[in-house]
Length: 387
Image (cartoon, rainbow, N blue to C red):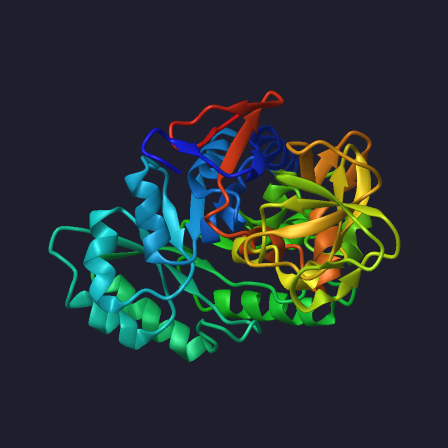
């Protein structure tokens, strides 16, 4: 990237904002009118780009945003996002005043935190909070009725804190076996029974629960992975009420094409040997970009045809075996559609033996994100494709 706003490498990610909008719109149509959508844009919107995704989600009808940490919330505020933002993770009590300054909602899950935060809160200002209940996820959250009663009492006795919401998170809503999910659901209802007065927001449904179990929607859902067009898990794909549109693509270009002779080697360790004369293309993407070494052997698309990555993936480059000589500069699709072929995020996740959430998240920030609308790249000040 330069001061002119161009980047000078032939690797980039494309995020289709129309698909983000379509996914959120489809979910909104599925929900009763009084159920709000909290769009989860943590981790730079799962690697898609927080600001543009947040804009699209809000345009499609989301009313709230959620992030993991205070830093992410402040970054959105600094980019001009004015919608309510909930921090789902832990925040230091000394940063409570900062949350008030930026109009950010905080998750609370410890009595000690509330007591410490009160000493940092200014007078005549209100900090909205959501109480997190741990019904079986085992991360953060209140686990007993006694704890919940105690923290509610403290919150209601100080007008500098508003108990705006309460929520939990399901560990197995995306699985076929629903026994643990049912236990969590039951525990959430038991803990809610403690409340003499319910807050404005009650939410426990993630994407999987929202799409499968309408009884868990209460008056808000947290829409994460499905907003990006990715299935919460392959096991429940057949249960989805509508098709999802995968928004993330990853592309590069061939920067060098050469003919190898029989016996010539490729890349570190000389692990790949040409069995005959072969055409090899070099792509400027590697493990520093999140295209990690374990993807050796993964197929990519060149001229609409699948070709394999050969040899070890390097820090900044990798090589593919071409069916014939192809001109340098030819577009390579690592994730996404090219002609009639499609490489999904799920396919890459299977190769990595991980979940689809991880794939766009690990594509590093040195890979520019470009945005598509109406089938065309949107020209942004900071991301211009240098042709």
